Length: 427
Ligand SMILES: Nc1ncnc2c1ncn2[C@@H]1O[C@H](COP(=O)(O)OP(=O)(O)OP(=O)(O)O)[C@@H](O)[C@H]1O
Ligand SMILES: [Mg+2]
Image (cartoon, rainbow, N blue to C red; front, top):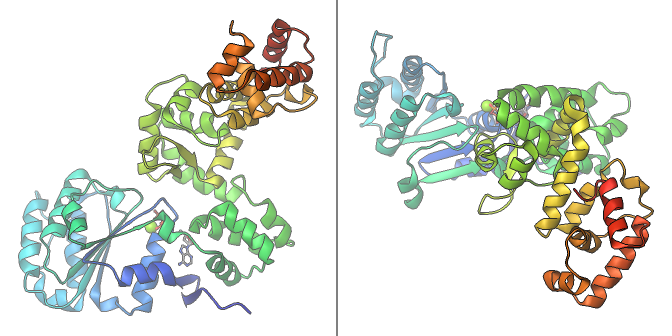
């Protein structure tokens, strides 16, 4: 039997060793920033339970109302052993001023000489003012007040100085991703047993996303053939779809929703492609906002120009697109193919060409190189000039042209262009 990757803390809650180690070794301030359902709250709960921190932790789930927020912080701090003697109670009062509360709390906590953890969960719900007030607490708190701030997306907190001083620990989606072994434990805990192969596929599908795995466990637990169902588990699964729809898609404004749906035909997306497929503008900004907003949009490069969607989310988006705008799909693939050929991504372009409804009429699919040459056919460039543009030999280009004509059933260049247009391979 394989050793367990995690220990059950209590019914349904697992202590996961890697994120727990990060929390234990953390500096004075820890920021947990990961999309909905990544396991932020659960990892914090399991940490408190396994390390027996109950009397030393003040836990607040950020409400939108600033007055209630500060009252619950004072109450939570007073609930700890060390804080009970130091922190004065705060009562609701008309015009209770957050900035004044911060000064008072800092003064009360100044004599603190043993570690107390203040955990603020769901920070994304805090109003801007309260966020700045929290920032003041973070920057000026006594050394023994440890802060853990959890949020669905990165917050604009001025914590660079802490980062430079090594006082800041950052825990992100990649750190919270379930390993295969943890996924197995989660499923076993729900009474679901899968073969290694089925488990590996499920893990790949969900990308180790906690909520996805949990939802899979729920749906597989009541299922007569979990092995088979696990194979079919995808973003289309009803429970995941409902969760994602409610949590992510429904919260986006109309422009972002349109962008997500229409670009779901792509394997990866950048601002230009997004604008092309939506017929709008500002796609790059929307993608950045979606990524920062924890909307299952993952940046693929350091410059933040290419993005992709979490696999389960992408499947759900494609399903929604089929439901709501099925007729637009071929045009989206055709536009994507053209853009990708123009931008030197022929292999990706061919994938889109194959999605076109007429594509099966080709006796054999085009190769990436043929797609690149095809793109030049409607121009007046000669084979030699095309070769120059593509940094290929004339011989190679003529070979591609010969194959292209054969596949398109054409004898002349204009026939090849007409046929490619009819098939949607050229716009
Ligand atoms: N350590 C764990 N043990 C058992 N289940 C877990 C664990 N971590 C996550 N899960 C499952 O994943 C779900 C989502 O986790 P959690 O609520 O912690 O996510 P979150 O990142 O706090 O999400 P949100 O941003 O929506 O608050 C949980 O409801 C639970 O079913
Ligand atoms: Mg949470």
